[in-house]
Image (cartoon, rainbow, N blue to C red; front, side, top):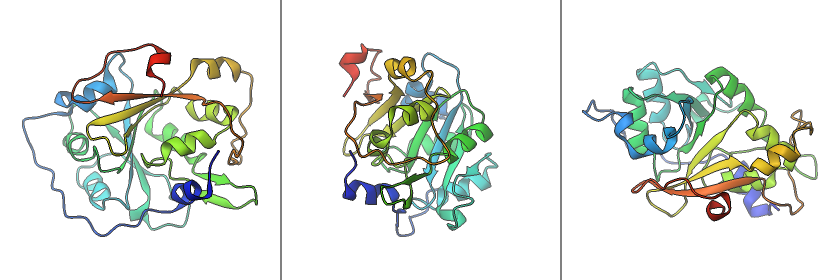
Length: 239
């Protein structure tokens, strides 16, 4: 169930002062040598993406442009200034921007990381359907699911059918654990939900806020980046 305070946090645009410039420096390290990259890519060869809030750090977009990294603005038709949009971009094993982002973003709540078989364009189109929610009064809210401090409340607000639709294209989400340095949360859909909802049709024409208490439709696993945790049993990992 989502309370008014959570809804305000979920729908308000982050306001922040201009950040100190964070330069990208060429170094001997690569994304492949970063512990977060190991956590993101272990056991598969799927693409990895970042979704970062342009309002959290203005240099996110500036560096994307400077290094010619393909990127998409998720709020391009929402009437917000371009620099305040959440930006979707790929992270690769041998790319200067990727190393900078993996090095600088943990603990800053800039955004979330996504592992999925979708292409950049396909993922942008998919996420676009989940950027707004409608409350009981019919009022639309912009949803900042890409904020690590909001993602849990956002997922809790989805019905089973909506959750199945959100995770359906094989989405795995990674987000900072608020208040826990060097810890990330890994979000995946429960396999039981995939089975139960395989015939359900998620209405993506308008996502409604779920105000009824319901069982969690996803699994959240804490991962300590200092010691990458091995695979564990679903019930032991659930939190």
